[in-house]
Structure formats: structure tokens, C-alpha cells
Amino acid sequence: MTAISIENLNKHFGAVHILKNISLKVEEGEFVALVGPSGCGKSTLLRIVAGLEKSTGGAIRIGARDVTNLPSMQRDIAMVFQSYALYPHMTVAENLGFCLRMQKRPTNEIAEKVREAARILHLEPLLDRQPRDLSGGQRQRVAMGRAIVRNPQVFLFDEPLSNLDAKLRVVMRAEIKEVQQRFKTTTVYVTHDQIEAMTMADRIVVMDKGEIVQAASPMEIYSRPKNIFVAGFIGSPQMNFVNVSVNDKGAASLSKSTNAAFAKSTALPRGDYVLGIRPENIALQQEDGVPAKVTLVEPTGAQTYIHTRTEGGEDLVAMVDAGVVVRSGEIVRVKPSTSNFHLFDVSSGERIEFPRAVA
Image 1 (cartoon, rainbow, N blue to C red):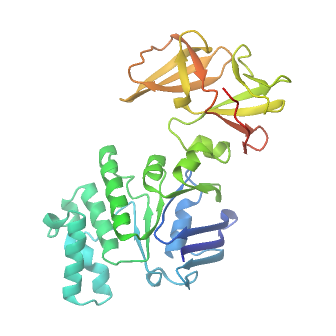
Image 2 (image 1 turned 135 degrees about the vertical axis):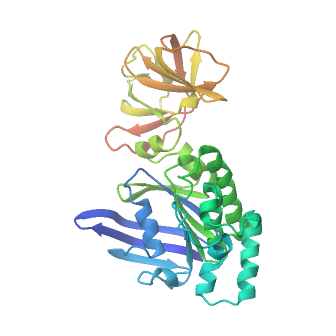
Image 3 (image 1 turned 120 degrees about the horizontal axis):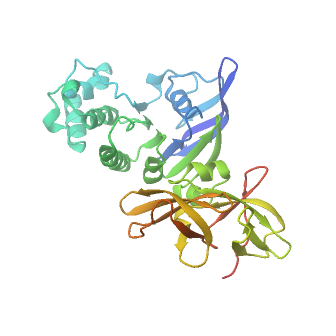
């Protein structure tokens, strides 16, 4: 059974068309991440699924029920917000049990569910505290616990970790994923952080300008992006893009750095393309490769990002091991991999599939 089914969903704010014929199916127990640039419509889509916004057209089903026109409280969902949305005058225990008290559940049932949620999220020592006495990570755990006690059909997360520091985000990523796997609850998670999406989701839905551009597994999105937009959005540092021209002999060379042979593949017809190369697929060579000037060096610990500019004016970023030492202003030779690259149509930006050259 499909846990969430969205069919031809539209949303207008006045004359602005925010969501454009969105159709998406989220399977029972699946963890789906919605990603995309600011203003792409991902949070609006989540709020419509939650019943916090009205759609302009289309239908939403959760399980076997059409919930398109149902209020949020009747949809059997639990939503965790970026702002935590805790009641400041209540203790942690009272916040955890609030929704159950509103449902007039028995006192002993409420106490049992609150204890269980507190145990799972390591909140037992904090049950008598109020939100003002908690750290950001502890507040987010309470917000998650409030969702857990309801035992909903669907978890909805709206950028829940964006207020946390980098170290705590890593910890909370693991905890959210662990909770989702424990309960096997269908989850839709909105984030602007592609690392969150890649590490947590079973499937990533990339959105742009109110439309779904690609929906696939994290590795499919990374290794076979549908178009230039997806290729550039997923991956950090982002994919390098260079114009290439293929001549009659099947030799592809960088259009501006004409002295640099890139690959030989008779499978590529004559023409102009956009070549995509991920930073980890560019090597720094001593002898062969394209001459380039180092413009910036970014150490990150295990890897270093080397920003370069070729003699022809292309900007290329290489990701190398931390042991590779270069300095800004130094001339190096960058050599793209002849097997790990992507081709895109110059006009449409769509991915071009082709037989790989034999080494």
C-alpha cells in the first residue's frame, strides 16, 4: 500500500504558481527527503501534506484515506518543526504528553508512552525541566518525542536541524534515522542540507521552481543526475562544468584549452556538449594534464579542495588527499578522469547517455 500519494498538486499564492502539478508516491515505511534551493516549494509541499496550507488543486491520500480537505488533526501525522514549537510553560514530560491529554487518553497510558519516548531519546533526566533549561539538541529531542508518542502513520520534518551547530547536527541525524528505522514510520523530511538528504533518506526528491526534477535513491541522484541542475545541486563541492567540442575523429577536447585531450570515444557524435566532472574525479598530475593556476586552497581535514583556473579560463575544483600540498599561485596540471564524467545537452541541460570508451 502507498502510504502517501500526491496527485497533480498545485498551489498558487495570488498570481504566483508555487507548486506545479506535483505527483509523488511515498511508500509505506519509506524515508523521503525533499531538497532544493530556497523558494523551490519544498516546505510549502510539506505544509500542504500536513494540512497547514490549502492546495489550489490536486489530491492527497494517506493510506487509504483522501485527506485533501481534512484538517491537520484528522490526518494522523506528526510534524517536527525547525523552531521546536514547545510549550514554554510546560515541563518536558508535559510537552511529551500534551497531544495525548488532548485526546483524553488514560493517565497511565500517557505516562507509559512518555516514559518510553524519554527512554528512546535519552530524556529521562530532563522530564521535570522546562524548555528554557534545555540545549538546542535537547529541545529537538523533546519535539521528536512529542511526535513519537502519537504513533502516527506519517512523520513530517521541516528542516529540524538547521538551528543546531555542525557537531550536533551529525548526532541528531543519526538519532532521527535510528528512530525512523525503529518505528518504520513513513517519513517526509525537508532540508536544504544535501548531506542530511544523502545520509538519511531512502529516496531523494530534488525540486526546482515548484516542480520535481528527479526522484531517486541517493546514489542514483549522485551518479546519474538527470540534468545540469541536479548535477550541480547534489555534491559538495559541486560538479565542475566545462564546454567540450567533439571533432570528426571522435576526440573530445576542452573547448577553451584546446591543447588538452580529454577522451577518445567514437561513440560520441560530433558536436558541442557540457562536460560534468566531480572534484574527486580530477587528479593533479606532474607531467600530463591541463596547465592551471591554483587560485584557492581549502583544507577540510581528510581532503583538500584545490581551486584552479586553466590557461583557457575554465575554473576547475579538484578534491585531493590532505597529504597533497600545493599553494595559491602555483601552476599545476589537472587531469580529469576519462571514465568518471557526465555529458549534458548544451540547449536543454538534460543528461546524455552514451557507451563508455574502452581503456
